[in-house]
Image (cartoon, rainbow, N blue to C red; front, side, top):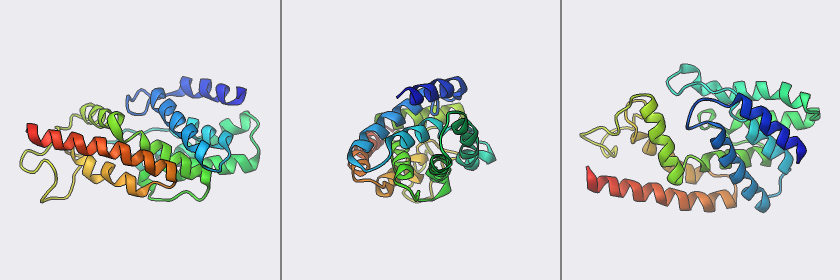
Length: 206
């Protein structure tokens, strides 16, 4: 669609200088969402528009405002959507999907469009690309790979603000059980197995 191509161009100009949340991240989530949309009943135009705009505002993980990134992105999306002629109802669905999709919001989106955005975004935190993103983020924040005395959180609560590998236990390994759609769950299961295999190999090496 010409409209989506225009939105892509707009978002690319605004994309963040964060390797885990850059324009390529948005395009991977876009691809995930397209696949899910084929299996689920949803308005593809609204889903993909929400995907393109879901990271308009992005605070660093070390910033206390980080938990509000999706809230700010939802607000900012409205003026962009108006500019491209979306109706008030469409804007409401898209902005609400963006607002609620984030893991930190601890919400299940009300609309199918929001559920698909959430699943598509979470899939990019899993699998091989998920592993790459974890360590890219950890490196950018100067976090060590793992806590040397208990690397896999067997006897302590995960602290992913200090140790990179802890993020697997704090968040990533939980995502499969939180997926909304059947197609999202199927893909999440495959990608979670990649995380588990990685951790098994890591245990043998350290």
